[in-house]
Each structure stands twice: as structure tokens, then as C-alpha cells.
Length: 128
Figure 1: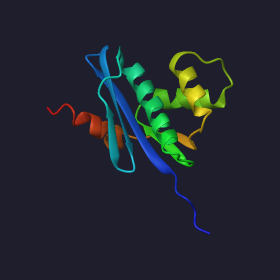
Figure 2: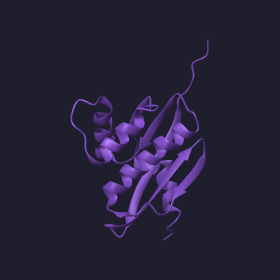
Figure 3: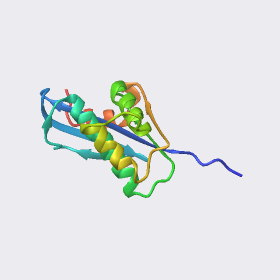
Figure 4: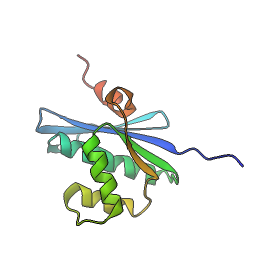
């Protein structure tokens, strides 16, 4: 019996200036999906919205075993707490938890910024 590998779904969000216009990216199976206008907010809002977009993208593709990977450690921690549902949730955490009920990720984990494929895709929008 062969072990099934989880699909890695990378996400990243940011805004320019902070606060300002938010944008995000999701990378799944090597495909970069850009969200150039996610409204106005701050970097924390942009990270949450990118995480939610990553979850929605994985669900829309019918993935069963997937993990969400990002470089915003506090968002990763809060999202994992939201999945456990032990505390009252508000704002982005509540929206994430509601969406996750449809098809939850197997795992949400942190990676270094330099290894976040979605962050790399997002950075390409703004060459220096």
C-alpha cells in the first residue's frame, strides 16, 4: 500500500503601504494564483485573507489531504487554535473556522519566508 502525500498549498498576503491595498497569492501544485486586490487593510488582514483564499482554493479543487503553509507565525498559531474551536472566535479567525468546516486542512504549518512559494510569487509583482 502506498502512502498518499498531502498536497502543499502555500499562501501569503501583504499590503502596500501598511495599512493599504491588500494583495495575496496561493501556490498549489506549482500554479501561482494571484489576488491583486483584496480590499484595504493591514498586513495581518492580508495574511488572514490569503489563508482563507488558500483554503477555498483547495476545497474548490476537491482536495482531501492538503496542508496550508505560510510564513506568518502568529496567523498559523491562531488558525490552528481556530480549528480546535475551544474559544469564541471573531473576525478572520471565525471566517476561517466556518470555511474549514466544509473540508478542513490536514495541517497548517509555518515555513521560512524564503521557502514560501506564495511569498515568492507575490514578491514578483513588485520587482526592486
